[in-house]
Image (cartoon, rainbow, N blue to C red; front, side, top):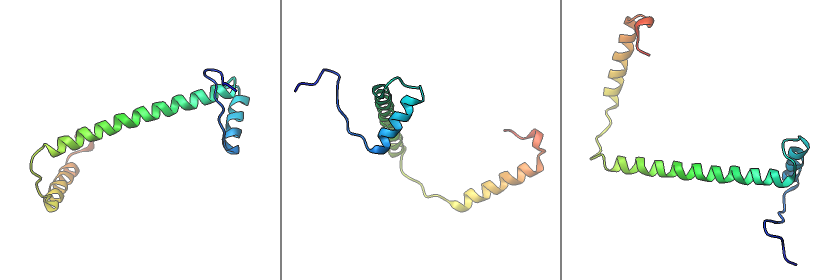
Length: 99
């Protein structure tokens, strides 16, 4: 038995089958095939976005690796600067602070 081009049988769990039926019954989709096409389109979009995120992450990692030798983090220095900024903000009226 040959299948028609563009035609495919798919087995779904009872929960997924019920979801597809609800989508069609809601009137948002005209058929189960429309629901499946939309689901696959969304899966494709998700895959594309994930690939973009991975490339961005790789670029950021490369940028970090090429930025030079690492320097140790001085936590106390960070705390001192933060406290100085907090003190300065408390002395400046809220309406004059930069957002």
